[in-house]
Length: 298
Image (cartoon, rainbow, N blue to C red; front, side, top):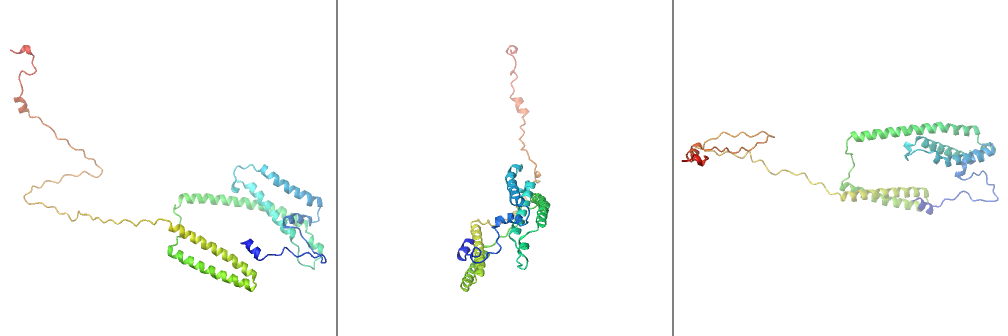
């Protein structure tokens, strides 16, 4: 989007150079304004132009060798993280201070260009404890929040509440976003014809954001359509017939006492029928000579 906007509405790269007109106050590119801020203090040129840049580059080169942490997370490397945050804060301050020049033309040119060294170095020194303290405090808070999140996840409910849109509401939102997209295109075209380039750029950004929302909602609808619906709950159709059964007993039938039913969980063992021998029949069929020796027989 930025490349498209830059091609449609190109921006001038500063003022055109005219040899007959004095250039006025010039500043270097943004990546050199930090060094330019030290030079504007009118301190020793060797100290501000050679020693400070060499010290900065040397610290960057030695940092990988001084870093002895085994983990890669910034929360597990507090001192290296604090050191990096301090360096970034000092770079931002010197970069801004290097290209800032008071716009008041009534002030003499030397006063506008010179930076008070006491103010600059005092701010640079104060940034060290402030950045270290802020970074270590944020790391402590991040670890504490992570610990509480793990405890809440382990002890809290497993199911997370979600926002699920029905098919009807999804279709209505898609139609509304499409209509809003058409309106934005017409408004951007009218702004372009009217010469309001800033409004046109803003509307172009809103058009891209709306298209992203439309595409995300369409993708959500497609993913929801692929999900298999849950089956309806089963309804029992059989009814108990115990209440409708009635015992059919005649008056002449012998009523037998009901058998005791075993309690729930108790296992009943089947009883085997007992066989009793009839001693009278065995006595009649018994041979008196059975089992005696042949020598004792007559």
